[in-house]
Image 1 (tube, one colour):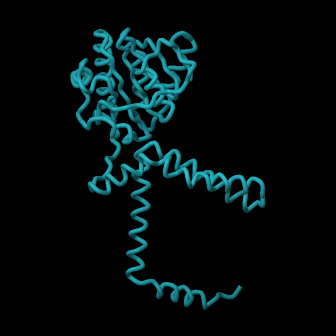
Image 2: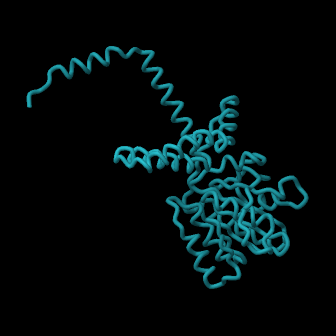
Image 3: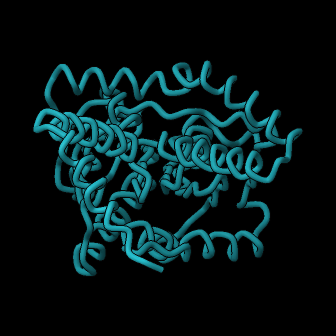
Amino acid sequence: MPFDVSFPAHFHGILSTISALDVIDILIVAAIIYKIYEMLQETRAITLIKGLAVLLTVTVVCSWLNLHVISWLLQKAIAILTVALPIVFQPELRRALEHLGQGKLLGKSVFLDDNEVQNVVEELVKASKSLSASKTGALIVIERSMKLNDISSTGIHIDGLITSEFLLNVFIPNTPLHDGAAVVRGDRLIAAGCLLPLTENRELSTELGTRHRAAIGLSEQCDALVLVVSEETGTISIAENGHIMRHLDSDTLRAALKPAFQTPQTNMGGLLLKLRGNNDEDDKKQV
């Protein structure tokens, strides 16, 4: 096949039409798109974005395969979602405008080495046992791969190194931060007094109070591990993936917490809870 000598000239002609302002324009748009993605990645909304991307991909494939009925249904669904998106992403849009006005950049994830993981877990276990002994209610959210800036923004920004003494002070009864949730990112407590969504499951035991229902509610919506200390009984519980495991001792709590801080993350914590829950159905409440 003879080489088309006109192609280089045609390509050169296209490049010659691109000015310096066009390059700047493209770079600005690319930077804006990347920043939007980065901001969404720091919240639970990224899962919705992935779902929309899958829906759009399926729509294109069905249209290419001439699956007319499915394509019609998907197109109608996309039209409805287009109207619903501002409502669904209202918190993210509000925060994006706030960050734009304040000129703030979102924080980055912190990855811990084995020694740091061990120290953080031990401090959490020590604090949990002290809170349990004194029957002081506590709700601690351990952030994993899904960022929880939308949750932490509902509370008081702290950003302090995690120690058992620090956590005990956060949950002192009759203080502003006592009734809310504390959010842990890496080896730091980034916020306290945060509000969590309550689960809508009606099959939960009546023994579970607001803290436990809030822990389950958040674990239904993201991959966070939520530690709960009951104010009534001092029981230590862990909520994960919409399930709650109660009456944890120090060893079980330690084994459940470690995977939440490790990278790459494994599901050994959830597996441990499920295995133990199979042996004690009274302690495990499935959602």
